[in-house]
Amino acid sequence: MSSVTGEEVKAAMIAADITHVDHHDCSLCGYMTKYWRQGEQLYFDRGCDCSWGGSSPAAWSDAADWINMQRDPSWNSKLKAAFGLVPTPSERG
Image (tube, rainbow, N blue to C red; front, side, top):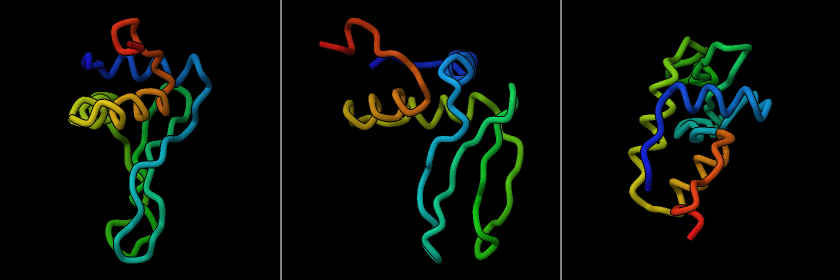
């Protein structure tokens, strides 16, 4: 698994015209939290106000760190694909 940078995530989301990537559902109400992109800005939507609520700016490196921390190769690949990152030849197998 190769690591990705925040700039790579940004470029991939913009190139693929991806506007959001689901993160996890709220443990209290089930609302799906997500990263979302508006232009060249990234935000994290924390949800429904029952826990943290609302959206806030996020660093592109936050999304890259989330991808890079995944140790399960299949989950790492799924996250990369969700952000529009094309697998490298070594990751394709």
